Amino acid sequence: MYAVFKSGGKQYRVSKGEKLKLEKLGTEVGKKVVFEEILSIGEGSKINIGTPYLVNATVEAKVLEEGKGKKIEVVKFKRRKNYKRNFGHRQIYSLIEITAINLKKKTAPKKTKQQAEK
Image (cartoon, rainbow, N blue to C red; front, side):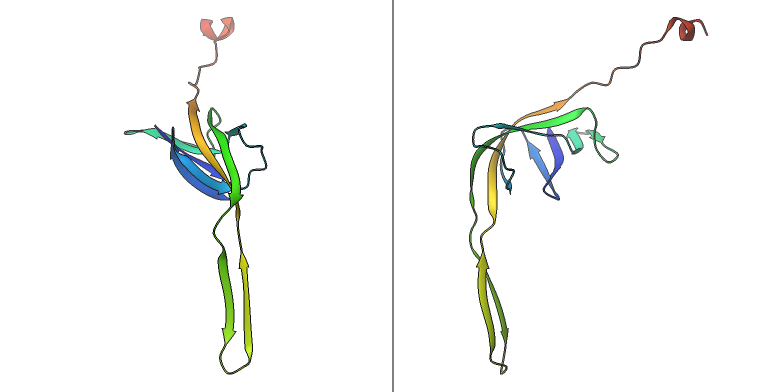
């Protein structure tokens, strides 16, 4: 079973047990995180797609660590103009492990006595 969820303006396709680097979530290491913006859930040919999100679905994950990624060098250079700028950036990330993908079954609303008589 896999799920597509949204976090930090990006979409991720995950399955249970996967490890994933996301933009910093702001939760402590070892805590559980629940993602509720689920775009779709599928298994084989059976796929549930939300409009835009599935109301009855969640993805649970555990935060394993937080850290900084590799340094990205940014160089701006214009030849023969005596212009050179050099700076870098390290993106902060959260490493998570997907623990569960939950999809609750839709239950039909119970009919009242008046609806049953019709």
